[in-house]
Image 1: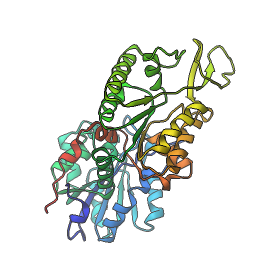
Image 2 (image 1 turned 180 degrees about the horizontal axis):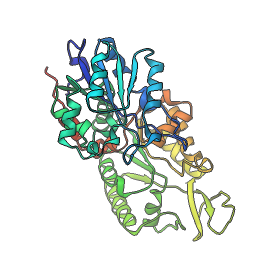
Image 3 (image 1 turned 60 degrees about the vertical axis):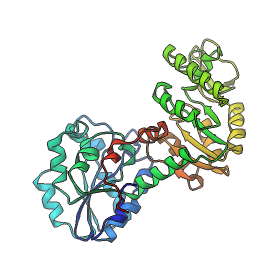
Image 4 (image 1 turned 135 degrees about the vertical axis):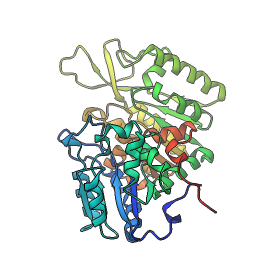
Length: 393
């Protein structure tokens, strides 16, 4: 077991560099659309603040190319101020004398949010000198950024090797929930996969088939599977290499006696229709593009979810970003939330759909990770957790 912040003693006055994942979704003008990742971090920050630590928060937002005002973390600081009034400061710098002076002036139990760490290219390069500069800001390093624990960056991997370290409550909860669900699944075990590419989830699918009873597949990644079964997909995205992978996975599932269920109807548009008016169809003709699962598919998936002892869901089941094609994802969000099974939902769009359904509190575990969650579902370890010290029993 990795050392957690509750295992740390005498935090009063200590400088704690807390790596969080505040990579929240933004709208076209840069406003925060979903605060799940910020809210999930509050218990760890509160624990450190209440014990008198000087909390230095390091995080990222988006994939900037140098400084980009739209990806500045100033608005994140405003959210934190709502939870910790009078205790939050913002630094326009990430390293250097100015930051060190701000840290020196911090009172015990206060918070300093550093600017977007990815404004420095040295972050994603895991630059040793940059990691050393970050480490010089603190006495202790805490990793609570589950969403980037699979990435060897300076603030997630490099710093952890230079300071006494631990994980926060969010990372601990994520690891326990996902690993327990995979090692001791509640039966029947149903998984739901959506999103764009089969290639991105091939390792997960292969590992899941060893453990799950039923796999439900929607979104763009469903169409290579349909094509592999010689079902017409029209003009829906379907690369030959994806069909080959899907064929292999279908054969493996059949050999193991596992069910893979695919869409039986679709919300589609005709490419020769200038208005691109959506309609429901069971069959995708050559000029059609599927954009969402249809009502029959929703009912099919619901029947499996209602029987499940455990559900893990990752990825939207249609072009969720378009209001015309979000119904399938929203419907499944509500069905999963209202089911009696143990449920884990991961991935930005899936979590957002559950939040918008107003039933997020009915999900057993909302995962803040995307790639990190997928790595655990693949059965792999996370490099940024491998370098965290073990708990002394």
